[in-house]
Length: 334
Image (cartoon, rainbow, N blue to C red; front, side):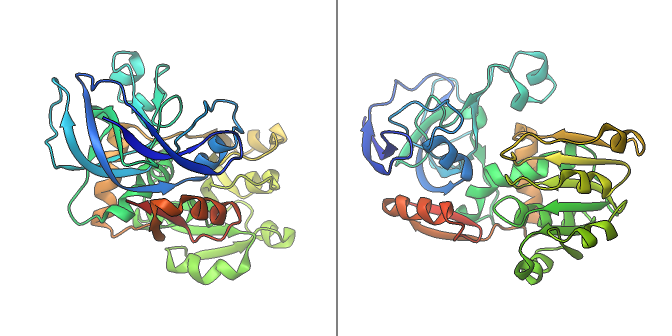
């Protein structure tokens, strides 16, 4: 069998038509015919080899929706023709202490869907069936695709760090991650504040569930929100005045990073000590997180803001994402 897709042949390069012959289907693997795949900022980092881990030719894509077309000999719980979703992680050892505790996303032998493997900008993919998730009825494929990465990335820290109803939660950035974080935090019953450097997004942020909007480029405004937030989720890759965000925490509060600033952050330790505050981070979610997140999204009508384009126009979608012309996720469709 030959799989056709789109690959970058060199760093920063345009994607070109590409085909490859996959390895034989292993006993725990399924083959999935891809119908949709989201474009994530991580795909662009990998195309540009910003992290130094990309092998070329490189087929990006890790927000995948499709139907099962073939089953390995030991696959259980999935059937041919079943609609499934695939996110950033393609496998784990499932034997280490973290896997056994339900934290497969922290496994030292974690393998990524499109790092060292060809990803979802293609017509099909083969993957460990234990990381292919049956999709709930009522969740359209174009919405499911971004949830499998962006959705669980913002949902997982809210759950792991025990964010509860009525807590005051801030979200920094209203983009591919942030617009979903606003929805999840709001539907969890939190009092949500959107922090943004784009004042024109206030109305949209409130429509997504924010109760308050703060223009974070204004120091006087930031001073007014000091000691108001229990949990702040930073979804941006920009370099901001992080000390002002620590100052915005209530005692015992957390500033949690799911976006990666370009420069190292610097925080005076005293500002953490006096309020028993902390800075933390969160990666992708576990398998349990993904299943729960998908169900929660359906029950609470949480949907990413998407626009679909044909897979053949992948370079157009990437170019628009590079130039911040997307609100907020582009989904490729076969």
